[in-house]
Length: 74
Image 1 (cartoon, rainbow, N blue to C red):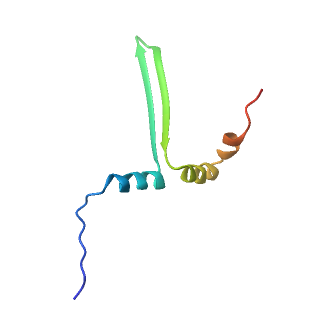
Image 2 (cartoon, one colour):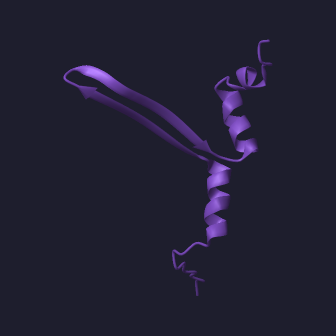
């Protein structure tokens, strides 16, 4: 007889936070407000929520770690 396990589908808050930090979430938003064809306000935002280890792994893959580690110009 096969052993069948079932899941209730419910996750604890700790499980959800652990998954978010492990995989990461990117929220990309772009808002433009125009009045009679004249741009009044433009907002661009990218929010990344991830653990430092996850962020550095993916930032290194796309070449962002060199700019993140560069010292500020004096």
